[in-house]
Amino acid sequence: MKKILLLILLLPLFSQLLFAQSIQKSRVIILSDIEADPDDTQSFVRLMLYSNGLDIEGIIATTSCWKKTSIAPESIVRIVKAYGKVQPNLKKHAPDYPEEEALLAKIKKGLPEYGMSGVGKGKDSEGSEWIIKILEKNDDRPLWISVWGGVNTLAQALYKIDRTKSKREAKRLIAKLRVYTISDQDDSGIWIRNNFPELFYIVSPGDNYGSATWSAINSVINDIDNTTISNNWLAENIQQGHGPLSAVYPDVSWGMEGDTPSWLNLIPNGLGDPEHPEWGGWGGRYEFYLPEFSEKNSSVGSGVPNEPETRKIWTNASDNYTPFIPNDYGRTIKPVSDTFKGDKVSLWRWRDDFQNDFAARMDWCTKSFDEANHPPVPVLEGPGQITVRSGEGFELEAINSTDPDGDSFSFLWFNYPEAGSYKEPVKLGSPENSHGIYVVAPKVEKEETFHFILKITDRGKPQLSGYKRVIVTVLPK
Image (cartoon, one colour):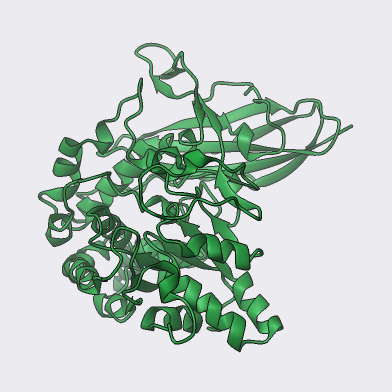
C-alpha cells in the first residue's frame, strides 16, 4: 500500500520530467553591452526565469556604440547571484532550472574595444575563444548567438575560424550558427554579413530602432491596451514583492527590454520554431530577402555605418492582425473593428501573452506550486502537419487539452496567412472559440501551405496561454 501511495505522489513529478525531456532545448550564447542601458539587466532577469527551457552556453560581456571602451561582467554576476537565491523555489515549478554555479562559470569577457578595432590578429578574447569552444562541442543542435549590443566578439571568433580551420571545417562550424542581433550596434555586423554570406542572420539593419521589429516590445500602440508594458504594471508584477531577482529589475530609462526579442522565439511554447523565423512567434516574424537600402535605416546618431546589404538576410516582415476581445453576451469573444498591419504587429500581437507569462514566472520565485499559475497544455487530436486536397473538408480538434492547476480555459483557433505560402485568409467553418473547428480547404492551382494556431488561455491570475500550430498542405485536385 505504501509503495502504491508513493507512486501516486511521484506521478506528477515523473510527468514533468518526461515533458521536460521531450522538448529539444535551443542552445544560446548571449552577447551583452550590459550597463550601456538598464534594459540589458531587465532582459537578463527575464532570461533567468526562462533558463529551464534553454541551454545557456555562454554569457559574454561586450562593448557597443553606446559603451565603447569598457565591459561590465560583474553586473551579470550580480543578476545570476540574485537568481541563485530563488532557484530552489523555481525548481518547485519546473525541474530544469540550472544551478547558479553552472551559469556563473559561463560568464566570459569580450575585448573592451569598439567594433572592428577589436577584430583581427591578436584580438582574441575569453569570449571569442569560448564561442569557438562551444561551436566545436559534439552537439548537432544549432548554436544561437543572441546579440544585445555590439557583435565584434562573434566577428573575432569568425575571423579566427576562417584563418585557422580548413574550409570544410569552417563551413561545418559556421553552418551551426544562428545569429539574431538587435539592430546594428557596432560596425562589425555589416562586416560579418558581407564576409560570411551563408551565415544565418536575423537583423533589422542599421540603427533606426523605431523601424525595427524588436522595438514593438516597448512601443505604445494606438487603439490597443498597453497596460502590460506600463511602469505601474512592471512595479506591481515584476519589480516588487517577488524576492531578490525581482528587486534587481531596474526602472525603464529608454525602453523596456529592447534586447529580449532576440531570444523570445527560442522559448519552447508550442507557437514558433526557431529554424523558421517566417512562421512567427513571441519574438516576431521575419522573412528572408535582400532589403532595399534606405538612408532612413540610420536615425539615432550612433555612428554605426549604414550600408547597403550585399546578401539576403532574415529581416522585418509585415502581419495583418485583427485582435479578439471579450464579448458580454453570446459567443465569449468577438473581433475588433480595426485590423492592424506592419512588421511590429508580428511581435506586439503576442505581447500581453508573454508579459503575463513573465509575471507568472516571477510569482514562481516565491510561491508554492499550488499558489501560482502555470500555462495550460494544448493537446491536438491528430498530427501537427496534415495533407488534404483542394476543396476537401477537415477537422482540427483539441478537446483533451488540460490545465496543470485545474483552471478552466478558453479556446481560440485562427489562421495565420503570412506564415504559409497561401496568403489569403482561410475562413473557419465553426466558432473559433470551440475545442474543435471544421475547415474547408480553398481551391488551389498548386501545392500550398496554411498555418492554423490553437491558443488556449486559462482563467488563473495572471491569465496564461499555451499554443499549438497545425500546418496544412493543400494539394490541387
